[in-house]
Image 1 (tube, rainbow, N blue to C red):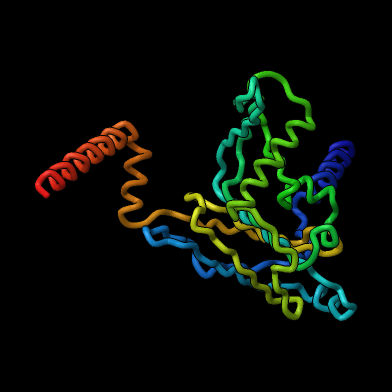
Image 2 (tube, helix red, strand yellow; image 1 turned 30 degrees about the vertical axis):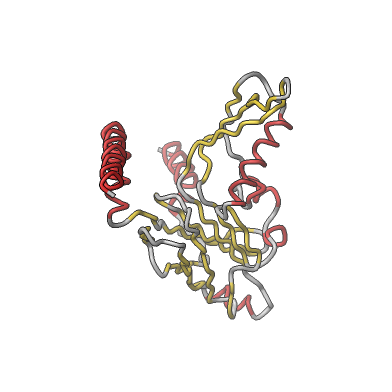
Length: 265
């Protein structure tokens, strides 16, 4: 009986932390001015405003009197895609494609904003682990075509992908782009370019204190085509063969109609 009670006591001590109440921590209330962006024929881009508040427990509020500062990092990622990058080389006076690398799970859109410089908010280890910042995107699982490449060469291909996305205004950073008022209310603007890819997006908001993430929140807005563009988009993706045949038929009909009109003229 004594051994049974002793064993029961040890088991209770072991499982007690699993049922203990978590310590009070900051909570984030976050929202967007819109959760859906509609792309129409005259779409030239859009701007979404993210806003929210930091809900702090009493202990944290008392600490604020000792000038404890919070920082925020907002990460926006678009739908993933596979991208192949090719390197041209001159052979016998002709430029031809030689080495090529395919990267998988590349975000079609990527934007990071923060209240301050990222390096001053959180450790470099965490930035690399969470892939926060365009220069830290891993662009994992590269597949090398036509031979082998060194790590340095693959890194150059990776930089080329990021640089191309930046030229298209699909990748960007805004250190200081998150406005924090009274260490409680915050807001930022997300600029959506006209060439933005359609699909589901993820907006992550991280609350950082003394280099440690003490709160987080995620939102899932979407960008979709609307009207006739949406119908054609679905038609092309669901029935590609029929869409291609229809496009050829329309082109032939337009050519025939134009020839008839000019012949009569």
